[in-house]
Amino acid sequence: MYCQCLRVFGQPLDGEDRPDMVPQGTEIIVRVTAAGVCHTDLHIREGGFDLGHGRRLNYAERGMALPMVAGHEVAGVIAAAGPDAGQIDASKTYVVYPWGGCGACAVCKTGAEQLCANPKFLGVHRDGGYATQIRVAHPRYLFDAGDLAPEIAAPLGCSGLTTYAALKKISETSNTHTPVLIGGGGLGLMCLQLLKAQNLKMPVVVDIAADKRAAALAAGAVAAVDPTADDALNQVHEACGGAPLALIDFVGAEKTTDFAMNVVGKGATIVIVGLFGGATPWAIPMLPLKSVTVRGSYTGSLSEFGELMEFARKGSITPIPTNIYPLEDADQVLNMLEEGKVIGRAILARG
Image (tube, helix red, strand yellow):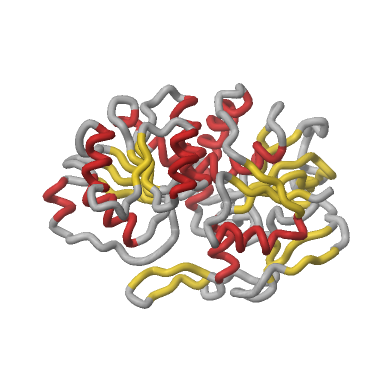
């Protein structure tokens, strides 16, 4: 097998040939046919992210051991199965749920393994999908991709699931009020498709990049606003028919969260998804004065992924712009993502 490894935080990924994997117990070895490139992979390569006020979350201090094969958005086919894995249809393409937990704690037993205190995330705690093979701990993490092409299916494990779970957190208002999305990249474009698939109101998209605003409009956004414009708040209010009551921030930076608090109306819900970094800039009294609910959303549960895959297999989700690159170019593709040169989703594949 071939893989792209992170050996030193802050340094480029490095290609490596290894022996083919052999499954044990309930494990499944998946031959990777497509692997998505995600902003989280950038944070991992950097070694952490900014917490604001001079603080930083460091993966090394949190116990992440190197070398590590990067990547967590994976689609592929069965290469081998362990003796306790049970019957698995090897003729299908599968999408891997990468956010496994310990499987035994009270949180995992609810299906919310992404919130486990002892996570086993692929590409973070266990070798990930920038490879020709990946080890999956249990068949419950494999979801039938149906007729979806691998490059379309792979990002559903993170990009799709993250947006789907975030949308559920504003479900009470997103069917009656125009929501706002901050960030028109891969997550924002995926969210537009999920809103459309569920017959919910299409959003206003906020992004500093003109090409991403154009992509959002092409995907069905009712308006696309540059947050640096002098009248940006007024533009959003006009497009929403008033101050919005639901907003998802796919960036998660100090400037975007400040914009979010300023633009929403009283009683609104702000869902923060992005991990760009920094500290919240809000004046504390504004939270009770505006009665705003601010909540985080981190990927999604096994059951939410099952719901998402049902939508996807039915063809309800229009694929977002996707470009395929050689697996060997993983580090260059990460650089493109860091420089804001990726519209939609970048996918790695070999052969």
